Length: 72
Image 1 (cartoon, rainbow, N blue to C red):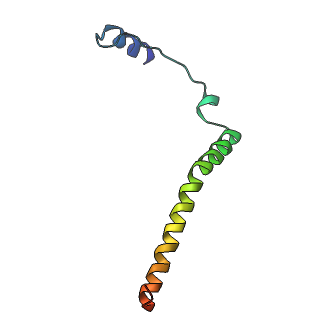
Image 2 (image 1 turned 45 degrees about the vertical axis):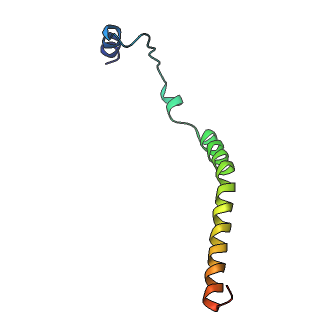
Image 3 (image 1 turned 180 degrees about the horizontal axis):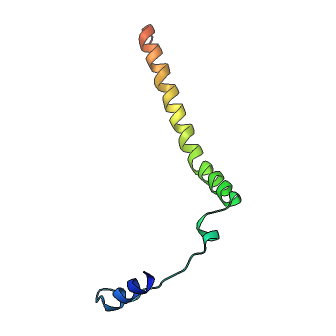
């Protein structure tokens, strides 16, 4: 299949260059260490967003309680 793909890419005018790269099975599936590092990195990026979302939800609930009690 790779040979056929390369042959078609060679004869296709819009394609100027192409590069076929082989990826070993070990590289396809990340190890547990890599998965843990990705999860940690993702949590660092999403933590501030989640904190802001949590604060907004808390404010909204407080406003609803105040409206019900007639203080807002």
